[in-house]
Image (cartoon, rainbow, N blue to C red; front, side, top):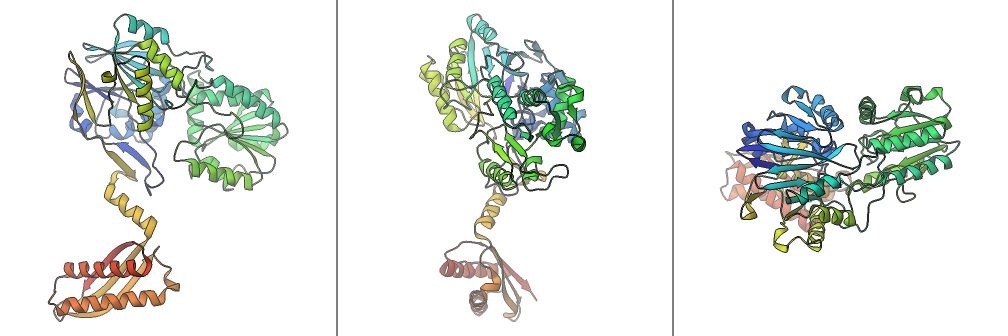
Length: 533
């Protein structure tokens, strides 16, 4: 989100997405930064609500083109700085640490940081006090009444703003708007984890969760230590985050209970707990390598219990299931959310969203964060809670919303597509993705023919080379027939007076396309190569 006031821009969060299954070869998906690049001199700062990749992961890419300070809690900035430092861009920014309840003047923006609970510690809602009233951005949040760190969502402050200045606009997290009731407390997961460790007495325990979920890591460590185990981390991101959280005092694991993964051979297996990355089944993650039997420090055995303390993000189900299958084939016992309540969502469910709406009593409402159906479900909740029908805006990425004395209205658009990252930024566009989908679904047929343009004769070929259409060694007759069809088409084109290579390539493509469709009812990518002798 970008807020504009007095010709200055304030960015609220700058994240990334992970690719869908049909985005072949794509590493990451970024927002289109065109508007920000074109207005780089007007950017005042970025305010980060929390440290998850979908909220701060894009900063290391935007900072290549723009330079600005970043405001957030110590943990949020620490998590963001890891990625920025890896890109060598820390000199392009200034990290400004804020505390709960801070209210700062950031250029013309009057910004207040209100604590909220989420699945990463020290998350904030952002209240921007503007000449047109208070704009409250919820960030990702839930109403956990018994959080692990006892840091509650500050509903009292939100209510105080609502009863004094009033909240002109609420922008609310919609991720779980379709889910009834209240999200379970993170402490509930701790009780389940303790029972899992108790049941795994005499066995080695390997756990996997989000590397940024410090509260979950704390509860896993507590359950492990309570059962007489030492704790080792497996995977670069979890090791970095554990170190950062311990330095900030957010994670409490005694020094004598935290060991290096290289030293696990010094301890009996049943006295070990490993906290690993890879809860989403990422192909090269530590847990995926474990499931494939390719980890240098650990080999899964029948004496292992593996706990997936997370829920598969939509789109990752296949990868997660593949990892579970691999672990089971190696003999491990696997505990996941389908077996026990070893995970709790970090996003507010319907009754919590209604509670926030009741306390904040916004004049206007825009649902954010979620698929379209989640936004629509949240909009319905807002109307149930008394927000006027015409004061709930249905916005899409790129919409420009103007807040004025006359109310709120969508008044324009800015570029807001997606930028696909495959090795380097901007290397892949929609056209390349379409080609990759065709290649993955139908294969490719390459036709090579050498011709003498001046005499109008075929010198060598045609030769059909294919991958993914038919298996060439078993389709000689089909390929011979196709090559003969192409030869006839080229000779006919010459006879008609064609002497242009581009026109010949078009004729070859048309001929092969018709032949492939007639004989196989498939539509592979066809690449004609006509060479002049």
